[in-house]
Amino acid sequence: MRVLLVGAGGVGGAITRIAARRPFFEAMVVTDYDPDRAEAAVAAVGGDARFTAEQVDAGDEAAVARLLQLHRCDVLLNATDPRFVMPLFRAARSAGAAYLDMAMSLSRPHAERPYEECGVKLGDEQFAQAADWEKAGLLAVVGMGVEPGLSDVFARYAADELFDEIEEIGIRDGANLAVDGYDFAPSFSIWTTIEECLNPPVVYESGKGWFTTEPFSEPEVFDFPDGIGPVECVNVEHEEVLLVPRWVDARRVTFKYGLGREFVETLRTLHLLGLDRTDPVTVPGPDGPVKVSPRDVVAACLPDPATLGERMHGKTCAGTWVRGVKDGRPREVYLYHVVDNQWSMAEYGSQAVVWQTAINPVVALELIATGAWSGAGVLGPEAFPARPFLDLLTDYGSPWGMREQ
Image (cartoon, rainbow, N blue to C red; front, side, top):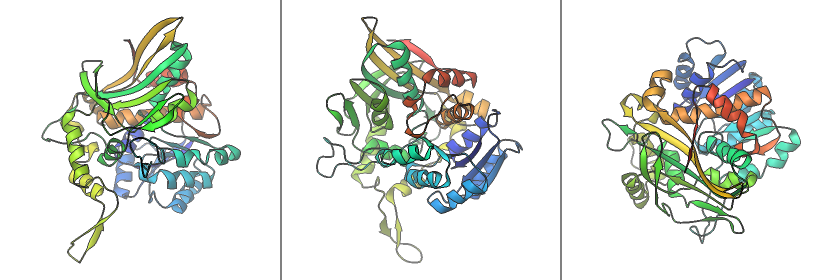
């Protein structure tokens, strides 16, 4: 397998460190708009000749397609933010390569009823092209990070091995991470965090389909394992709600994020001031007026999450809570994956949140390389057997857990 990795930031850099320990691929071309970041990600793997660096603009479909063909890459792994999903998705298709991402194409709220009805849903643009990918015999695996990704694998595992009927699947994400020296320092891309937290959350119910609610709705306290403890979680827009019902039979699907009240209030303030906007505004510059995106300004003012590992401590937990019936009896479980920042920094030099995101696409690539996962079209993680993924994740030295509720 020959891989074109687009994006050499925190997650992309972690991907190279994880992949370097595995023999399943022949080459990985690491690319970024900033050539220094691509070179740094390659340098971090200590002279492994399978890795090379290139510069590319992720929004330039033709340039990405040329790189895929030049390096004879079988698959494009997208480690950029969601703005670049569609150009990279199209570039892979035009070059005849497989595609894998960790976040799907962006949504747009309903124009008149944003908190009741869906407008353009996450992934709609990609799924609209599913027939073309299938006809071409090409595979696009969408939403294959940790959330979405491993959380979806957990949903498939629960349906296959733990339940006869599923009443509800709820993704629950929480952490007790803290960053020394910062009052506000998100552990993941603030651009993506704003997008998913301030858009109308989507809920799925059988018979009703997908619908939306107010941001931060239905608060609940969820008790996370491995010493993290109780965290208040709220509804957030996330890909799992759009993916799980396509392949797993469940009466209700939700995603709730353990943000904490201070984080929620900060996001609300950004929204109130219009600083969550992506449309450019005109501001004075040294050479005259310039246009800038308010959200990009917010991101530029905050520390790069990839650089926070040395100051960070605590654990992060991604998991899938499932309630239903097995052998005629009610059952409720929480399937989860916990990463301790101290461990991930010592073992890989990557902070916990980006490392937890990065390991899952690498596992998926290895399953595709070995033929354990195969297919054509636009498919979510639920479309594949879960057991090979979970076994391989454990083999990578990152076991998962299950708690009976």
